[in-house]
Length: 335
Image (cartoon, rainbow, N blue to C red):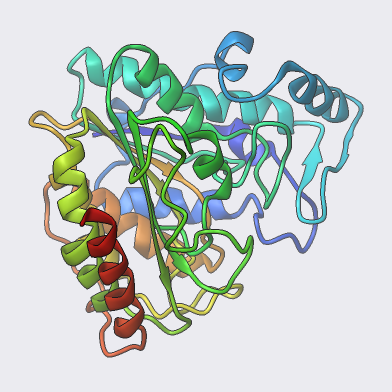
């Protein structure tokens, strides 16, 4: 497995008190080290995304405005998102990390990659920043894969719904977007009946979770709702928006997961990938540093095919009835 770690990602600094603080990357690096990935030979060198690659997702007017803001010293982009002078370079490198991972995996150098990128991306809509996100990193990667004739599955297990990714691929039949997320919670999207546009009906799958929902509820959702749909879709690549803010210790969410739940989720995602791998994990949220460290360790160790002594998987939380209603909704859609 390859990992992308770069000092440029830490240089993106939204300022004192912001949840997406640069120290998050220290926690990620420690999680990767605990997974046995401290060896420089496992490092993937990210590259900058080209302007043409960025423009497959974002219009030039937005990119020009974002770059200009950063070059002039940074500033607030929206209610939640702040750029610094180094944020443009970090964002372009974060978007390019996924492209570099595709190139390396296609060359047979590994079967999976974990990209410790900042700023995150899944809230970024085509024409604007949102929710700490500047450029939609995972969407830039998926666009390139689709352009090469691939079918792409995006699994988003961040506690917040990835509205930007959903919007970008809403009517794209060769991309399946699956999200498990707390409901209600920012940004307010991700209802079960959001299932894709007229050309891609059924390729968006949203599983909202009530506050306090534990890992067993998510596993049931994967068993009853997600796995049959992914099997029918038959992806060539699996991309993951890996937020770790569903952990019960996270300060800005209310789900009840443990680090052990990320072992199970990661294994399920690996099983979705075609023979030979082709799984790329993109860092998104996760704001308690210890929970972030432990979740990253669980994910990376599982991607390596090793066992990990993570905390026990969580169970007994509320929300099974909501999962049943979502399952019944999809049964009616299928009929």
